[in-house]
Each structure stands twice: as structure tokens, then as C-alpha cells.
Amino acid sequence: MEVYMDGTFVPQEEAKVSVFDHGFLYGDGVFEGIRGYNGRIFRLNEHIDRLYDSAKTIDMKIPITKEEFSEIILETVRRNNLKNAYIRPIVTRGIGTMGLDPTHCPKPMVICIAIEWGAMYGDLYEKGLTAVTVAVRRNAPDALPPNVKSMNYLNNILAKIEANYKGGDEAIFLDAQGRISEGSGDNIFIVKNGIIHTPHTLTNLKGITRDVLIEIAESLGIQVKIVELGFFDLYTADEMIVTGTAAEVAPIVKVDGRIIGSGRPGPITKQIMAAFKTITEKEGTPI
Ligand code: PMP
Image (cartoon, rainbow, N blue to C red; front, side, top):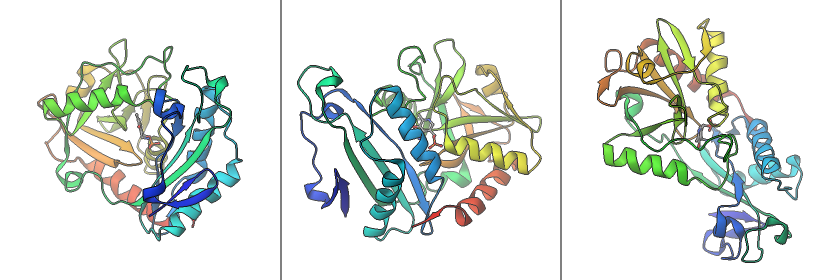
């Protein structure tokens, strides 16, 4: 496997970052998770835009243009002969002094990793996932905005650890006010009486797959409402869905021990999963 690092492609074994890089020292950096299907990169421009927006929020100037970055992503996929790719562009703050001040890091470091990757949840797309709400709250938007896809994923990792102990396939975060926020690596939707509901994106990542789900629902004539959701809405949902680049569109059939709907992926969920598959098969930037 070849990894792009700061201007060149290097073999996997040589793809190493300095211990003085602030990405390593402080989680100071941003990244994306992108998928390629059948030789096409899905929603590439949207991911690139979000990467640059994340960087701007943490006051980091990515040293290459969006067009150059897109080309690096395509070339990484090409060089590794990937058909169904999972791509990880990363921009770290770069090498600096031991203090945390980013003004002492002269140049951000651009990295791109790409691997072959299929369905993240295996047979659970058919059976449905079990989710648990977790005690740890999603980072507050006035502390570290969850809209920034930063290299600091400890908040999400704490949620995942808790879900593992509680026997959940995925964790569901509440925000500081006790409203449903998102999963550890995906956005959340519930279906109630034929209408899809999802939280606004102040307290979660503005998911690109979330937007795809909303587009699909609109094209199928299913109404989507952006609302505040609590425990009650989760436990009484007819269907539940999480979306993410890695997770894709996945059904949740149990939350905190409560069975959702029939305990199997529901009809609207299945319709959306099928439409998502069709879109990912035909859309995208050719590599
Ligand atoms: N929330 C979090 C915390 C995530 O890490 C992800 C994955 N990027 C998502 C939501 C879903 O975002 P997307 O659909 O853009 O992958």
C-alpha cells in the first residue's frame, strides 16, 4: 500500500509522522472519511469542502488548493488499485515546539491513506444494530464544535468504550441539554408515523450521508423534520437509522433494551437503504 505524505507517495512502512507533530502531541488537525464505490469517489467535493471548513475553524491553512487535494485523493486510490475504497485525508498542524501554540508550527502536513473496505457492520444491515445511549455527552458546540471533524476524537472514543461495555453496536450521544445528538461516528434519524425526524446539526457533525438520506427521502416523497429529540422519541420510534460514510445507511432495531418497531429493519429504512445503494453505485467522481 502507498500512502501520500507531504508531496510524495511512500510505502505503508515508511508512512510515519514525527512525535513533534502537533497532530500526535495534541490531536491538533483535521480529517475526512470518504468512500469510493466501483471506481468512483462518492461526494468528493462535499468532503473536500468540509475538510477545508474544519481547517478554517481551527485557524489552519491547508497548504494546497482544493483541486490539488482532490487530485491527491484520486491518485491515492488509483495507485492502490482500489475498487471499493475507504479514504482518509488528514491534515495535521505539523511539526512545532513542545508548547501547544500552533503559531510555532510553520507548515501543516498533508496525508492521504486509502484502503479497500466493504460493509462496516457486516450482516447487521439485514438484522439491525443494537444501540445504547451513553453517559458521556457530545462535546458542546461552545467548547469544541462537533461540526469540526478534528483529529481529537476522544469524546467519540469514550462513547464507543461505553457502548462496548453496555453491549451496543453503536453509542448514541445526548448533548449537554439532554437532547439526542448523534452516534459515535454517524448521524441519527427516527421514523414516526411515516415521517423522518433528525436533530439539527449544532450539536453533531454535519454528515454528508445525512444530506444524502434527506435527498433520498424527498425524492421518495417521505417528509423529513429537523427537530429536537429526547429519550421518549427514541424509545417510541417506529424505525431508527444511522448514517455515516463508514456505516453507510444502517438500521437500529434496539435501543437501551427497547425493541424498535417490529425488531427488524422497517419499511422506510429498507427503502432508503436500497435507494442509497443505487445512488452510490452510479454517482461519483471517476478515478
Ligand atoms: N458524526 C460523526 C461523529 C462522524 O464521525 C461521522 C463520520 N464522518 C458522521 C457523523 C457522519 O458523517 P458523514 O456522513 O459525512 O460521514
